[in-house]
Image (cartoon, rainbow, N blue to C red; front, side, top):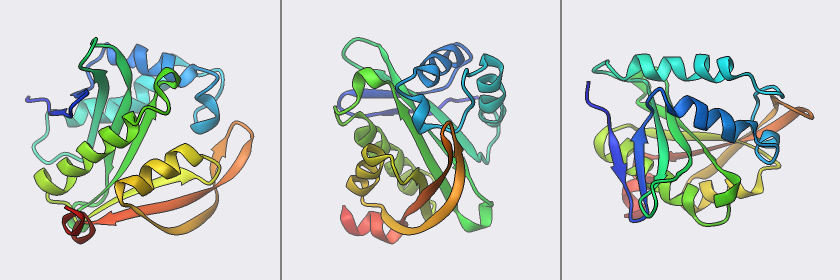
Length: 184
């Protein structure tokens, strides 16, 4: 099994290892992060273990559908967040990107830098046709990240996300391979 590592100027994106489960759980359980994800509060550790299990199982496969990386600072080796891909049916050559940045690192361009490197991987290495993202309509920071990445808003999915404060609408963003290569 060969884990995929991605690098940017400031970041190492290292595929998840079992010890990352606790770091991801702690970040997602942070009250500043809870409004932006669909997990229950308080967040049980075993739910994160179950959620990451499909990605861990996929790591040994040749044709993968799931990737998950811990975002690590090259400067000091600190855990900054997570980013990953959830695959779709192989014949559609599509994947959905997701990410969470620890609140101590919000506003520093980390999500944009990491997402750009994952987009490079999606279109350059995996040769996919489409990269999608869903984002709560109230998550302005994440919307800005997707738009900086060059993704386009394609639609609104009404009340699709069960969040801590009830059902929320979700924007669907996407980038096609021709969009990606046109922007280079």
